[in-house]
Length: 254
Length: 225
Image (cartoon, rainbow over all chains, first blue to last red; front, side, top):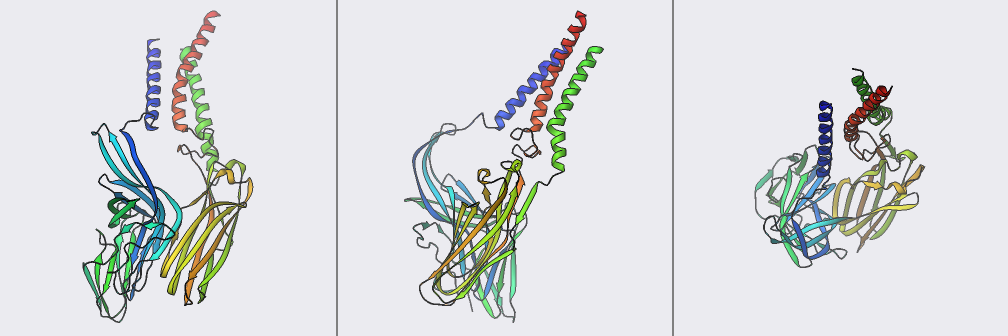
């Protein structure tokens, strides 16, 4: 009889522990800080998804299973937003292309506390994305160089673009093709944590300006490659755009 | 000795019924059915191509994908629309090309995607985030999806312009759902919103006091005799 009672008690305890585990997993038990939104505003903006630049007398092609994550980390509190997409751009002959999606950016001024000490935070984040995409040429006056690439195109359809880096600024590399045929240089971005860009971006939501970084990640399991093709009898100066060596901008040498 | 046998018998019966009803039968049932069905359009590739000097022009294309879904699968499966696209746009002067994709299911619009191409030289390809069709929009058995594509190109002056848009492999995918993530798909799951493994564990434990109760009842009945 004693053994059976012990067995019954053990069964009850096990059942209780299972229910408690499920409750915690289901976030029934909430543990965290309090937050009070003091001020909030939003603005729909053309948000950069991906960009690609082609050398004059050459071409660029990004190949993978087309699965990307554009990650924005904005402001001193590193508010993070992710946008998932799957379009690759293949510019040719000095053209530069950028692709955008209309997204609702929110600015919040928030009082946070009390666990880590009461403090105020500025936040910029994407609240939602819309089914409206825009792919545009961003090269400036000449296809020979990316020095005058349009970093902040004017507004389109009543919506402003976010500010991002796209210009050639200084030489990191040089390619001379004195042969009679084209050649291709391939750079590879591994899946998962492989970042292809680390651009500085500026987000302005109704006058509230936040600076941060834009990262483009290979979200597919396969490796993503950028293929840069250089035509015969020409030379180019190359600038690695952003903090990685994957996306190149060009200036024709001869 | 007889008491233990009753307990073991009742508990064995309890566990066997539980396992058969919640795990074994549904697993067997789903092993004999296709969990993914794909319906494709009649052509694998659709092309809108225009080689012109006219500043403004428009073109339309309808892609039809008829598909069937049984009553049991509505709400217990994920119905999604997929296609890949490829674009190649070259023009002497700056032009704006607008492509509107309207997904129409059984005569009702489901989703609208707008794509603008601005410039003189644009080339690329890819796909859009999948279009998920809500169960309440589906009809039992015959359904008809139309992807209506409308292209409008605008330029300021007459100039050479080449436009090509390819729509590749448009298809509908009907995939059985496993809402509770227990490996047993909703179409055969007696408890589609509750994890069958957890329930088996919990009911298995509850079976112990029930079996003890049956055993006690049996003992009392025997003693009265």
